[in-house]
Image (cartoon, rainbow, N blue to C red; front, side, top):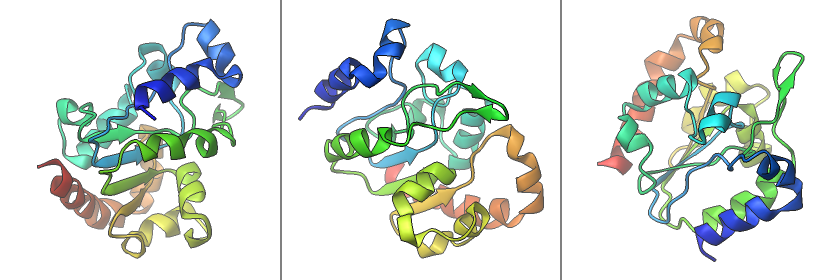
Length: 192
């Protein structure tokens, strides 16, 4: 099944009618030649409005971590970007609401099947890590990310690149010293 057809079906799904009625497009990127897939949480309000994944300060930081240009990042022959939910989930009491639990299990397998050349999966944040690592996940996000070598080759767990995570990054300097260089090396293997 083509990726375009899946996108049309996703937009026609009654569970997404609220978004379609507001004129929102699903916020993700997928191309049949993609080599790296970034699986994150859900688009923020700004990304939902623009229709562009990671169209915010988190995206700027993520591209810095990956050491790629905007052009590379938004090239669907290099990167697929599949959040756990393709629509902004709304505001909660302490930030954005979580992605819908049934969304990724219904749509990700179909989309991933249309991208047979994926060589590297970047799991950004706890929602993606819990879903994809299942029983291989560590007791905390910090421990999962710190154990990144356990998941290589092919999978690399990351903390969310939100500027609000500065405290976590300050408390965990090993992330910048150890994980980012490995991340850049892995990404360069599949984007050159």
